[in-house]
Length: 307
Ligand code: PAF
Image (cartoon, rainbow, N blue to C red; front, side):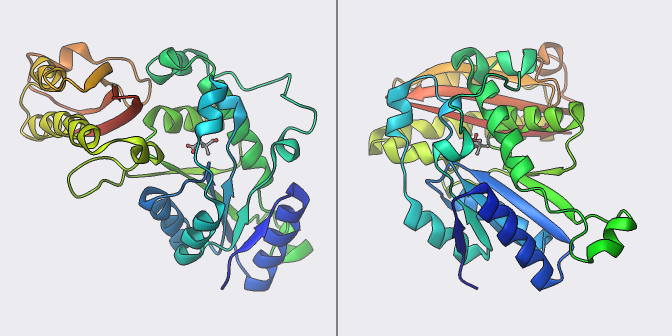
């Protein structure tokens, strides 16, 4: 089926309700994006299509989560290509609102605060980023909520049967995913958050909309990030000490790479697991986080560690 494009919240609500009813569907999935879509987003969309009767993808470059106006202007806008990619995955509806549609009164006075989970790692380098991201995610989750009583009308509504509602986020943005899960739990949003594993190029580079800004030499240099993460993964799988320092030395040996942070953290609180990762054999679950500038491009990556 060709994908439908809507640009207003009213259009999104009406079309998603119509689709859910016409398909006799019982579940709706939302894939929030900022466009400039790549295979990583395609995987999010495909997962949503496999798990839901109706799938909506939003495409909105959210000004609230950019600290720097130049960065916001530079963000790639590729609507036609994005719509084709979403259609190929079987997404039913694309929601591409204007800034005025999402923030009709200008920037919102009241916002979601990401607290100390949002102040560290990415948050330390990009102040206000996660407050802006969570604020728009909260709005998008409300917009995508399937209407009560669908598809069985009043009978389902009376019986308390609501369509299932799921939203899909990439594990590549590990801190964002942890924060969205925390917001949904802390503020009782009626949605299941599904984390989808990072998609990598065959040489290991995590797919990102920013990779298009890397020169060939920078792209080669950027591979050190995933190599360092893989080193930790291998050691974790072998129950060896993670020896973060040697992985760190590997990253620092690459002159085009300027490291911001590299650490092993608790996957829920994102607090460093110092003791578990240096001399003692690794046990349990952790997340290795890395961020660096490669030439002018800031990249992030991470690796879940389980043993
Ligand atoms: O991950 C992103 O693309 C954005 O942060 C999101 C979740 C769409 C909010 O603008």
